[in-house]
Image (tube, rainbow, N blue to C red; front, side, top):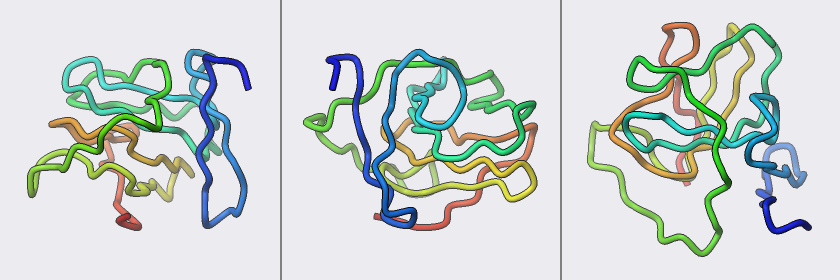
Length: 118
C-alpha cells in the first residue's frame, strides 16, 4: 500500500476500505472539518450532490489519520466519538469518525445520526 493510503476494516460490510487522503469526497475519502479538527472516513455516499459540513463549514479532503495515533476521548455531549459510525438515511451518507473534534458532521443541514459506538 502506498505511504499516502490507509485502510479501515468495516465490520458491518466485512471488507477493507482504503482511504486515499485527497482523492475527493467519495467512499474511501478522508474528510476534515476546517474549523474544529473533526476527521471522518467516508464509507458510503449514494447521493453525489450531498455535501458534508462540520461547524457550518464544508468538510475538506484530508490526509488519513495514522493507525498509531492515540484515540482522543470526546467530551460528553460535544463533537463526534472516534470510531463511531454515523449515517444520514436520506442521502445515504455513512462515515466513521477517525478524530474527535468539537464539531459534529452534517449533510445538507441534517446532523449525522450515531449508529454504533466502538
